[in-house]
Image (cartoon, rainbow, N blue to C red):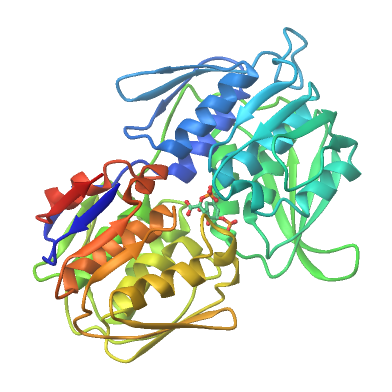
Length: 439
Ligand SMILES: O=C(O)C1=C[C@@H](OP(=O)(O)O)[C@@H](O)[C@H](O)C1
Ligand SMILES: C=C(OP(=O)(O)O)C(=O)O
């Protein structure tokens, strides 16, 4: 599907969709916690549904409720529970969701009943090393990497795991969430620099809501490098709190906050907490740095336009903010340099390439310099056609940038927004935008 977005400023108020990162974590914890857990999660997406589907394949029972999900756990998943076993050799279809694959691979290994994990789009190419090698070193047999389905057999032994901090934090999160299933303490050593750190904090926060404490300290890796240690000791396994709530998604709201900076009268987003563990809260500080006016409210935030000036921004802790930040940089005066962006190459697309190609396709100026993205602002880009490259965040970035273009923006493959935000174009229209969908 193509979406043709008219060059009009966005204004008004929308509610943020439910955070996909929080939803993944709370669903996984609930699926391994005895008892029933109700998860307040008012919106869903293809990635959240992938996690639901995979947990169901393992034997969890997940019902839709008026406000989200009611989860009954995978049988026998508690390390202290000897009753029925999870489904043996289950087939888990992770769709295109990296989080689902990297969170559930260690869990399947820890359950020890075998399984196969499959996926589509770019997922088979996205890295699994060095999580893969650590699982093998702890007693698991895996089929070769890069080919799906990936089959898992054997049972993951607890103990000390070591991972680099600069490939994907999802490896760390996956091991931390599998730890309560292993029946003995687990230590995960993460070599510094630890990038995407707020996502590890979000996992620690989710585990805490399920009664599992993770102690953190500085440590030294096997080869003497500086590292961070995460020790999980969960003698009672995961304990359901009964009800948990998924917060609003700062990474998706970031597109509307950017639209506020690019528009005429500002955009407000409701349903966002400034106490959230989501690191993408940093979007507000970044927009203020560009020069936009940022206003807080008890239930969210609003951003209004002002003179925007290019800046240098380090995105090691917030890689998903690059597309909305790049939309602002594309029209800000002067040069923006986005640094620490190497891991953008291994997302749904090579986002260093697709972000810069999208800006250039609309008549702006962007280039890649090593692991940095360099954008020279153009006050009124021409508009034109952007290939979303099957990457939801590229489609959303192009749609938001359309507001400042001279002519409409055609987004090829715009349906990919459903990965994280199926109602994105409806919300764009609610903010006064105009979008025509063509098949
Ligand atoms: O844990 C998570 O929920 C995520 C972690 C990040 O990935 P990396 O840690 O691989 O950077 C982020 O880009 C992704 O969209 C979601
Ligand atoms: C990279 C993303 O997600 P995942 O890694 O879960 O596929 C994303 O949502 O931008």
